[in-house]
Image: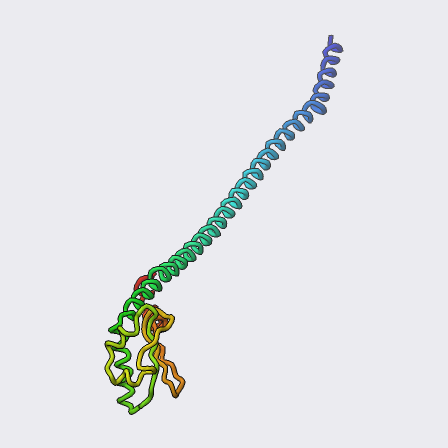
Length: 208
């Protein structure tokens, strides 16, 4: 009986030894594997989260840069559009209106006659005795201007009459012996006026 118990004890000891040497290490190894798997999974999740954050930050930065480029392009396009509009307004409104106004005023026979009278007065004040030719707009009959001039001016005019030119307003005066032409036609007057008032006009209309 004692011997059997001793045998059982030995068998138990052998079983315990086998359990300790094989099963326990296997359990330990399994636990370590599970722990490592958990650690690796956490690292993978952490890396994936970091990569997602980096990609999101990169996408946001790219979107921001594209927005800046778009806003810059839009701002430039607006400035160019406004400048083009200014030029169109200046051409359509200012240049045409000025041309129409000057042409209308300079085509007035009285204005032309007054210009010739002022020219003759200036000549006399400086003691200049010289014949000259007067060229008037194409749409005005010479007799209309001649009737408004003094006999003194008509005497000094070439052929005692004004002649017709190819412009629409004003007058051109040619001093015969000096070969000098004083151009007071509508185009010259328009350019002269525009030269002095265009800046003020732009400042007034385009104060942007």
